Every structure is written in C-alpha cells, then in structure tokens.
Length: 319
Image (cartoon, rainbow, N blue to C red; front, side, top):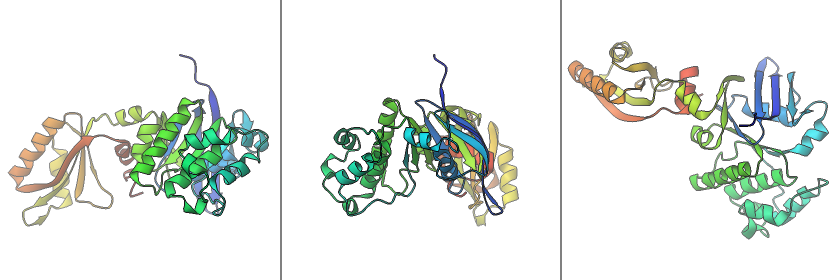
C-alpha cells in the first residue's frame, strides 16, 4: 500500500476573541482522497478551525497549508484548489439554479461543465427554479455544487446536514461518498456521531477548542475496550435511588469496565462491558436482591458518543 500523501497540514492553530480562546493549538494532517471528519459539539471550535484552513479567518497562532500552499502567504493559490460550503450560505434568492451556478463558474479561469454537475447534485429538475423555492436539502445540494464548480482538490463541508430531514441527510451522505470515489479530499464538520461514523475515514474529535482524539472510527470505539453499553435508570419502589447507593451497587458488578452518569439526568446510568450477558445477569440479580427496579433498560454497541463521554464526561448533545 502506497504511503498516504498529506494534502492539509495544520500546526498549532490558535484563535482568540478577547479573553476567549476558540481554538487552542490544533494539530492534524489530512491525507489525499480521504473524508476527514471534525466531530464535536456546538462551540467545540470546528467551524473556526475550518475557516482558518480555508483562509477566511486569520489565525492568532500556528500555520495551515493546503496542497503545499500556506493559507496566509499563498491565499490566492489556496483558493484555486479548494471548494467551500459554509455552515450558513446566503444565496441570491431570486436567481434560478442554472443562473447562480453559471455566475459562480464565471469567477474562475476554468470550471467544470454545469449540466453534469447539476445531475450529480440531483438538481437537474430544478435548473429553472428560483433559489427561494428550493427545499432545505436542495439548497444544501446547490451550495455543494457551487463549492465544486472550480473542480477543487479539497472540499470543505461545514455541518452540511444540520436541520435536514432524515431522507435529505441520507441523500447528502450519498453525494459525499460519490465525491470521495471521484478522488476528492473532503473535510467534513458535524456533531452527528452516526454521520461521522458512516462517512469519515478518520475523525478528529474536538472539545473546547482542542483535539482530544484522532483516529479511525473503529479504532476510537475500540479504545473504550468495551464492545457493549447498557443504559438504564434505577429506582426504589417508593422513589428514586440515592446516587451514592446506586454507584456502590454498580461498581460491584462483574465484567463492567466503567460506570458513567448522564450530565443532565443523574438517574441515567451507562455501563460499559465486553461481556454483555454476564453483566446483564449480575445487574438484574443485584437489583432484585436490593429491591430496586431497573427502568428504560436498553443495550447497544459502543459508539463515538461513548468515546466522547469517556474522554470529556459529557455527551455530544449536552455539551
């Protein structure tokens, strides 16, 4: 297997707004032809990091290079090799789809053929519709088409499926995977763990402006050393179970590697185990012996959400 070729190199990127540090010394590399995910909660620094790499924001420290070009000293060349779909794209509402794509194509010395691009974005039937009449998913696909009109080496997609219904989200997933098949390098930010797991070759997990983990989805989940998670609530017959008693019970369970509680709901527990059956049997037996009820019990395989909880003590949704 050929050695991976680095197409983006980020070293020590920092961005401050007054006393607040939005991005704090971020380092990573992105390889040619991969889908690289920035995964984290809102406010983790994903968008600010992407905008510094794109040359839209000037970093207060560190460097970023795209295809060998420095984003601060060679910005014109960087713009020639990237395509950007912003988290919030303002389009000319009264223009027709074909008109706006042609307009964007005119900004570049060379551009891809418009009709095949609209076909790829599933917009052929909308070419004569005004932008204001498009659905949310269609507007997002149009924004991606505009990011691709110059045939970029690297495509930045900033939370492209936020606010979309499940069907529109799946359609965009298919488009991202097709772009990868075409050899594009894609940097994708998201706070949806399933999206990151499905699309990304590697994931950079961010929180509070810092990189807390970077690896393949499978390796990140494997780092928990627990195949399964058991999620439930514990109560006594006459009310809630005191937290100290619950922890004492759960810490005694066999085959359980770690016990976690939800940040916002302290009565919800998650047990991580690589012996699901043994842990379940032990949990049920001890609860029955103590006169406690198990409520809302569910079992599942460990996920990227669990990795984030393990590393930060909070979930992606709560953060």
